[in-house]
Each structure stands twice: as structure tokens, then as C-alpha cells.
Length: 442
Image 1: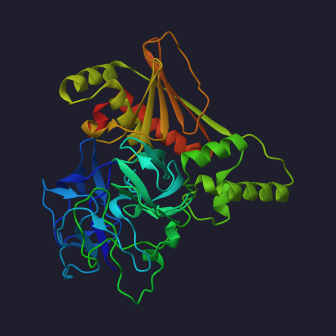
Image 2: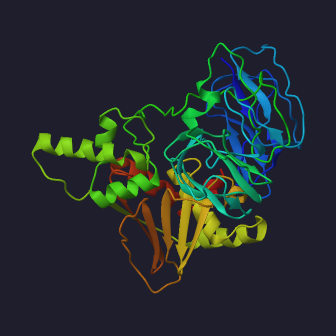
Image 3: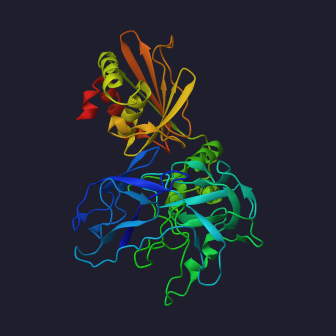
């Protein structure tokens, strides 16, 4: 089985991405989750992981190349010598004509890549109706991934000529979900993603032409176009007892006092999203009926650690002078993200100001980001507060306070997010980096 590797859309109105460097060579074996290459836009740099295991073949872009979003740049195949056909270059807007219905002429809007290993997004809702005039900065729709809910702007001026997905649809990244035309159309299209002819066409018939990726001025040969996952396909339940759920559902669960683990125990496909709330409610009510108990408030884990601030103060001063764009907030975010896990989103609250970062083990790559945090750090150093045990939020909370010659680090978290030994490992890792920042570099 082959897996097409495309230039991902990292921004809301991104035309192209610059391929910084390949981490794997032509014909080399790769494992799912390994970093394949690094890509840069005008706003961020991201490592792109292999979506499957196999052999990397058909590399068609080199380090430094600027590649249109959606263009196939490599293939993961079952063998190292699989012949591949290179994509054909083209330019200009494309009139999309799927198998059973013509679509208006215009620019395609795709489901963007909002996370490091995201393969789909749930369309939460549209902010514009078919036929509406849209401006470049108008919010077109909202999309939810397993980590965040993001408002997506239109990216260009025009008219919403087609909506190709409906609220609640789980759409693979890179798939066209709307078309914006330069002029108003008489009969705008409005349908669900699963109703798209491209997803329901007879498999024995050749695939029809599709609109290109958002703003991309390249048409891709169908023999190398990204394979469309089954509409609405979701992940199997996570192994090892870990529950994968979006921040929005986690908040709803906390407010209602529901246990996400009970939904996971039913075998409901993960990651869970807000649309799974009713299933979560039913799972909790069923469990409580069986046990004969009423729903109670969720348990909270609380842990504390004490470290010296000396090494941290010296390291923050060094980082500010030697690492481009590094700040105390971004460094602490990198420490917290590395302690929690790869590709974490961290919010730093300090003196009434909140800053959110996409954490990276490489300090220079920890950059400002949007979305719901995986962990919240309240940096209270430099204040008169000498102790703090802040209540958990939609993510685990870590507070940092100065007390005499020590820093006191306190972690609080709902048990469904982080509990027991997992919470202890996170706080111990974070405290270790605060006490000895050089540990993070090595």
C-alpha cells in the first residue's frame, strides 16, 4: 500500500511551504511517527512525521524548494524500488468537475493541518452561508482537532460558491471543503463531505478531477494525488489506558462531572470530540446505574516540588542573549512541553499576560501558537506570592512561586487528564529542567 506525502497547509491562507531539510533519504526505510522532513512558512517551522511505515520513494522536492500546498513530494511504499510517476505542474484556478456534479470555478479551501500529527479535523460550524460575499480576514469556519478549536479565515476575497462539508463532518487534512469564486454564482453548492461524489464514486471507475489545495497553483496527476481516507474514519481506542479527547469535550466532561475513561471502556472510537458528549453522558449514566452511585465531582491530583532558582536565572539570561527570539516564557514553555510529551501546546500566564507556545525540545523552535493548551503554567516568580495551589483547568496546571531561596512547583490536574505516576513523572521532569536547564539541551 502506498501513502502520498504532500506539502501540508500549516497556515490559514498559505499558498506554499519551503522544504527546509529531509531527515530521510530516497529508498530508506521509515517508521510511522518518524520525522520525514521540516517545512517552513512565513509564520512557523514544523517537523512532518511519517503517516505509515515503509520505504520513502519518489522524492520530487529538494532542500530549499518552495512547494505549493497539496503537491505530492514523496511516497511511502511497501518496497524501496516501487516505480512512481511524478506530479505534473500546472497553474491558475481550476474548474472542478467531480464525477456526478460540476463545481463552480474558483480557489479551493482545504481542511488545514493544525497539529503535528493531525490527519483529520472535525468541522464545528460555518460562519458564512453559500453565496455570501467573503473578505480575506472573515472567519469562514471553525475546526476542531484533538488538541484545539481554531477559527479559520477565508484567506481571500470573493464569494462562497461551494461548501463541501457539513458541521460535524470529520474531514482528512488537505481535502477540499469549500470553493471561493471571484464572482457570485447563481446556484452555490452546499453538501456534506460524505455526499461528495469523490468519496462515493464507483471504485471501478477512474477518479474524477478535484479542485487543488487551497491557493495552490498546481494540478496533481491523479496517480500521485493523496489517497482519500474513508469518509468519517476515526482512530481506534488508544492503548495503555490513555484517553484521547479534544479540549472542548474535556471541559464539558469536567463541568458535568463525567469520566472520559468510562466512554473509552465502551470501545467508542477515539479521539473523542464534542459531538461525542451524548455518548459520554450515556456511558457515565449506565456505569452509575450499575454501581448504584450518583455522579460525583472528579478527583484531582496535587503534587509539589522544591528546587533552587540559581541555575534557571543564569540560563534564562544566557538564552536571551544567545537564542533568537527566546524569552523566559518560551524557555519555560519548552521545559513544560518536553516534560509532558512531544508537540505539546503550553500556555504561560505571567503578571496578567497569557502567551501560548507550540513547545519544541529545540528552544529556537518553540514559537507562539494558537489553540487550547495541553498544560498551563502560572509563572508567579517576582511576585509577593509565596505559595499557590491553583485549581485544575481544562489542562493540567503548574504554578511556580518564589519562597525564600527556593522555587516551589505545584501541579494540579483532574485525574482524567493526568493522575498518579504520570503526574509525578511530568512534575519530576519539569522540576529537573528548572533545577538544571542544561539537562534540557542534552
